[in-house]
Image 1 (cartoon, rainbow, N blue to C red):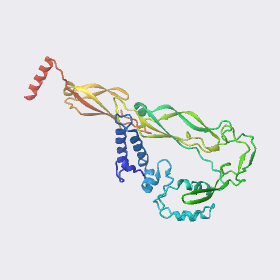
Image 2: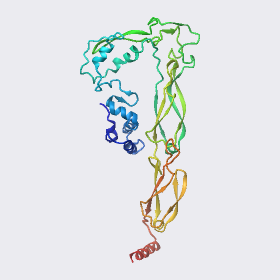
Image 3: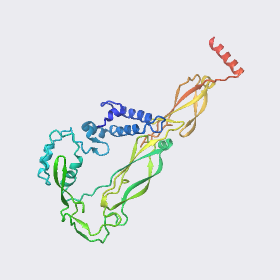
Image 4: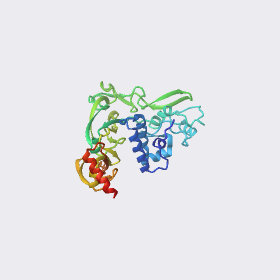
Length: 376
């Protein structure tokens, strides 16, 4: 079943980017795994929806292509269904190219997932004579950080099992002085004929030779460590810099830190999304910090100067005469640094007037006198 990202965030298709962001923050706060009633599965669904709808370009693609859109790859393998793709045209187009033959009637089958069947036509037939060297795959990882690390940024070490360039052959797949010969399987053509039997009939195509990977030649002997792949899987520790102001559900990209590519191809990227542990004192709302501070009756009535805890330490705050419980004071530039900016949010301090539950005889007498004075 296809996902409706708008339903996931509880917004309409006409919602502004601001409304989408507010909806995401509200739901992310509600379902955060660190919360008592948090839901990690729901939190991931919310984050996935926001990664698409929160990005204007991805949102346009999603609005245009619907369920065919995939957050990671752009489109699902079977995502042509319902988008005006004509299977008869596809069959005619490839009927005389690369030996594609089928007696299957594609009419009315637009919703069927043929991604696995047609994979070689897009990667092999059109790329005739070319080596199919793949760039390294991207890696997605999650990291949980403390509240203050999210606010002020931090340097952390992340450990990954990832593909690294083979040190023995320097990524070539063979020793430096190894003899290069014509591929015995494809006889130097770089392609071999492939046949696949499916419920639709028999498909034949010209695919990239699996032995030489489309090069038409191969070393007489592959590297003994990577067996010709040019890369091996290793555990790798990577130092990452978390930017100040990162929030739960947001992610960073580290270019080239993903899996190494095949035989010198470009490496993939590393994407790290973050979860943030809650704090006992501070609560975050966008770039603002929310706190509460208790004061007594005398301070509320007569005014006072009190110390308030902020992310930067204790600061003095003035309480005017006659302050009511629930009054919110703003401490400018005491909030969260704005991501990739020099500015900061504010700290909003809600004052709570504490009513004493136990009074001495003298305190009661003074309050009685005060009440009598106020009643006049």
